[in-house]
Image (cartoon, rainbow, N blue to C red; front, side):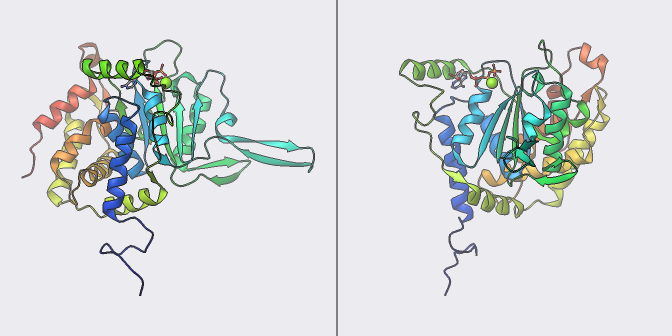
Length: 331
Ligand SMILES: Nc1ncnc2c1ncn2[C@@H]1O[C@H](COP(=O)(O)OP(=O)(O)OP(=O)(O)O)[C@@H](O)[C@H]1O
Ligand SMILES: [Mg+2]
């Protein structure tokens, strides 16, 4: 007789508990390289669980690149990194058709986007044409070459980093396409004790260029992610919690500081991310606190301030804090 476990999955497939343990271990692996920044690490894991893309914003030198490199090192998945420079062409991302003199044929050479975890570093340093090529691939999970669609691998998750948009020499991502990112994570400056710990590691020989040397090992892969996703999909959401998600989104649409509130697509995104977070936290049901925990990361790039509010110094995070404080929480 086949030995199915109590979760009913076929042998060789990780159980829900094993998948959760692997993703917890992933967070531990990342902490071998990155001190603190737990919220950002959690956001990246939530994105992997939801098959969603992440935008990470922060000033230079707060370990945005290191974070994604560390997550990649902790996963046995294919990953590629591209530095988005001003002269990067769409074909440098998606691939291009080249003539092979030996076979006298035109052949498609895969670009770096054909991978599982794609790090688009400093995406807002590249002109709109190349940004558009990546945004299309993200949305459609395929690349079209001479009219022929080529599917990207599964999972395909983009982690894009950008410097704050007011920086010189940047091309802001098109507002209307920002919602292709499931989450926008804001990477803050480290707190003092984290920065001291980071310097201590450097003083004792830590080399951010050598993550293997720092002891990072792959602790999760496609099988764990598959099992985790199935479990996330089975996480229960009570009608009251669905109502709460909708009420939060509707409240953003009424906010006098906003010209654009969260759309129904934003509401579905918040449902997905809250579920993933609930499951990661060890529960099989979503609480309003899960929704609160993911609301800013999921909605901040899907709402737009009125110019007057912006001049008065209102921020999108401030508006979302106000919304979360005012919407009645189901009990
Ligand atoms: N929280 C942290 N933990 C460990 N190292 C850190 C941390 N913050 C910064 N560092 C150090 O700073 C270096 C710079 O990080 P990194 O290049 O990833 O920054 P970045 O945010 O991608 O910057 P840029 O916007 O210029 O690309 C890292 O290699 C690491 O040595
Ligand atoms: Mg960087």
